[in-house]
Length: 164
Image (cartoon, rainbow, N blue to C red):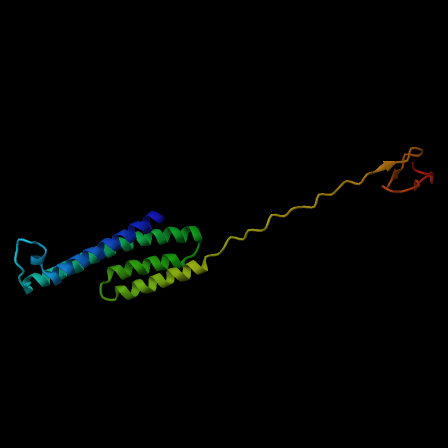
């Protein structure tokens, strides 16, 4: 479960890093990266394909990350018995697949996952009960008639003789 969530997180980070790298290259221009080339303005024929390339790369990494998050949430749902995790994973995957309103759906999915965490039923563990150890009564018997005599009694209840 943790491994799937970790992979989803890593794919999200890689997608965001790729997006930031391409945006920085577009803003700063390719010419400023290399010291052997003089800076030149970036042409619009290069900007449009680069923007679409960034969107596609980010979309693919977001989709792969959502698949791993869904696997993780499905396992969490099976182990905890909370079905909101299944729903959150499905909405997260749908949000990653739909580019336009997907970010809003991803936000809703993470809210559902948070609600699911608060709804997990805690296992009822009863405190360990310790039974009182009963001390066996000292019982004695009358040496004259054999009747049972309670501890501390001075006389036998059956024959009435004095107990030593």
